[in-house]
Amino acid sequence: AKQQAGAAVVAFRPGMAAAAGGLLEIEQALASAIDREEFQLDYQPKFEAGAHRLAGFEALVRWQRPGRGRVSPADFIPAAERTGQIVPLGALILRQAAQQLRAWQQQGLAVMPVAVNVSPLQFEDTGFADWVLDLVRAHGVDPALIEVEITETAAMTHMDRVLPQLARLREAGVGVAFDDFGTGQSSLTLLRRLPITTLKLDRSMVDPLPEPSAGAVVQAACVVAEALGLAIVAEGVETEAQAAEVERLGCTHLQGWLLSRPLPPDAAAKLLSEPSVH
Ligand code: C2E
Ligand code: CA
Ligand code: CA
Ligand code: CA
Image (cartoon, rainbow, N blue to C red; front, side):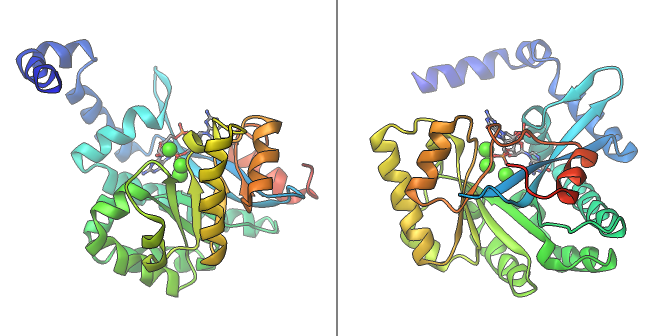
């Protein structure tokens, strides 16, 4: 059935591209959007389990497309990855995160680490890790204030390029998070070999909680994370029941709409300047 579906896609490709609004169209739009820097970062807070003290942020890119409003990253990151445009776009995103950290420092705020999503294509350039370190230092920012998030699948399929550079970043104090954990192929034993500091449990693992079999899997991941000295973040926490359950099962950090939506920089700065409110 899969092959038949594939054949149909080939046969109808021109029409489908037009129906989808045109892939080429978004690619051309992305190219000029990168030139014009039409992107902003929102910052979703991450909290410690238990006391719910602020522990840091995840930077999430937003495209403010003139005349069209906000485009979701789910709608343009895959296109940017297909075309390689994620490389200049990813560099722009990292620069914006470094600039934001510098700005918060200059405002006298007690800054917290910012995690940035990084595509495996960015690691194709073997100088990428050094470029990141130069960038951060040029902004007067401690490398420990930056974390990179790489998806489980991406790290697994580009291991030989990615691992040495993650190790390089780690040595300099940059945090490394293994993103969307639970959606890919990696085994728990493989984690031991990875130069990472944090596991991020995908929302698809958190969503079914407190269903017991889902809980058993989350608990196993937490046990391994703890034994390896890794932080473990539950992503996509939307309900009090999920929050209570991930804390009971051993997650060290929580992120999700229950605690906070992604915030524009001003609102994120406000959290940095306040005593913990959650
Ligand atoms: P991700 O890295 O897994 O990011 C988490 C996504 O879940 C974000 O969606 C976030 O807004 C959303 N989210 C957070 N809490 C909740 C919750 O409680 N419930 C639900 N339903 N969703 C929640 P967003 O911002 O639309 O980003 C989607 C994906 O786009 C990200 O998934 C990431 O893969 C990619 N992305 C976003 N920003 C960047 C970036 O700067 N660079 C790269 N390479 N990819 C990015
Ligand atoms: Ca992420
Ligand atoms: Ca994730
Ligand atoms: Ca995800």
